[in-house]
Length: 105
Image (cartoon, rainbow, N blue to C red; front, top):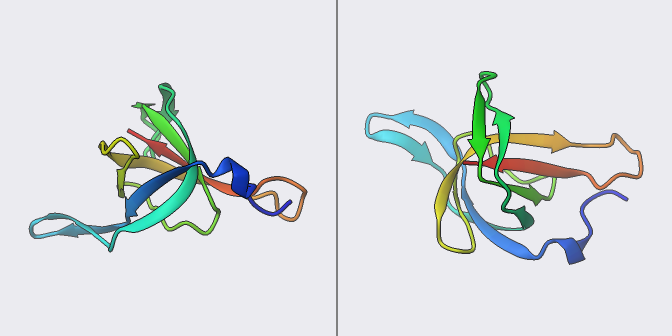
């Protein structure tokens, strides 16, 4: 198994990758629509600085998805949120479903 099976990718989100800060605030790249599995469960996670924060949902997307921390994401409901962390889940050739775990505010 190399990636998430297509039948699990039941949801669609829109990701605007975070590019950095500009003179006018955060800058984002062009919006990209991504198929994923969306789990809307509240849990405590750690952000990139190690602080504990609350994640309201998690998206499981293909491993090659471009979604750095602080990217803007629009969920199927229309709610916009930000990426806390995007974690690569790569089995390194083992028969695991490789994917990107996107923790959302």
